[in-house]
Image (tube, rainbow, N blue to C red):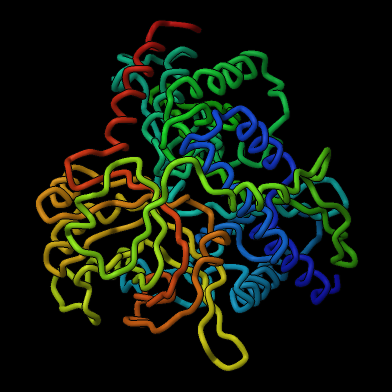
Length: 511
């Protein structure tokens, strides 16, 4: 096999997966977009998502800044050297990272050091299988941390909030899957897709669940019971009112795929792999002799370009937009309420897990009084002059910073934090006491927001790695929604409460 040709084929697979959403996923998003009520926060979010898909495709840049932990599943003919394929994949991953198609996401679990090239112990994940066919099949999924953190596993029998007892039967499985959608709320960048694995042990059950994410969105399960269950879950999940980004609305789930395997008598696991709307998975067939791509998967049917979404997101929403420019006063913050749409211009600073952990016991490298912290781990590259440029910059899931956020806001005088998915009661209390707000940006809209960033004016704590450093960003018309205010109100808490009430309506036995 020509290894240089194979490396190019793998590189093309990585680039395509990161930047170009598959046709079946695009059609599912369009269906949700068409069904949403016009003028709502959910409709605005879906317009932004559609615009972002178009921009990523057009600019060949990452759809979402969190390009996840690359996971390959490969089937090879008898006699093909799998060790050579593994080395070629590593080379392609390194090059794709250099070219800003992937964010450097490989972090040493003990030291916290980022390798900078997406390689490391066990990374990327590569799983081989042998088969009787004469060509190589390579599947790749890029599953970001926000949705990966909403994976969940149930051990039956168990008690579930809102649904009661789930037994070791099809109805108990039904309850677990419904609960998995409820517990994700907007933190996994809903509207999402789920893969479900029934049976196995703890590790094989999760592997089976993730394998379901490689199925076509529009296929039908060959098992009649599971086909019925998939349709049921898709229908009922969209009655929970969680909606896109957890803002409420009609679209909470876009796809449900379920697989089953045998188990041992003592164990009954239901494993759920939750995937965000930025459902980045692709597959290719490769000629085992030449290394060339023979076929791309998921290419059947119409490709929705979403080119009309650009105009839609540029239209002024009916709700009045409030402009903010840092530094922001407490008076300005206390005038904001849940539901307000804001546009930010001026300076913002990124800060994620490492920054928040650092700030608890250290001084800030810049004056943060009256400033905005953006929960974001961008994809960055250097231009020909050696200056940093932003390639992708959507929000990360904020709930991870819940142990720190309120204390840091008070310590440094921060007036606004922005991310996705909302935060909890500790932060809400601090917003009320200190005079702060939480701003929800649209998860996964990495190109849309990168376009709002006009310059990179500096960086601190780069030793934490590109995603975790504190980037100084100059922005213009950076749009977000106030979802937690200084008056004790939280849209996230309200949606969670109402969706729990709706979940309880499905407690009665169905299967």
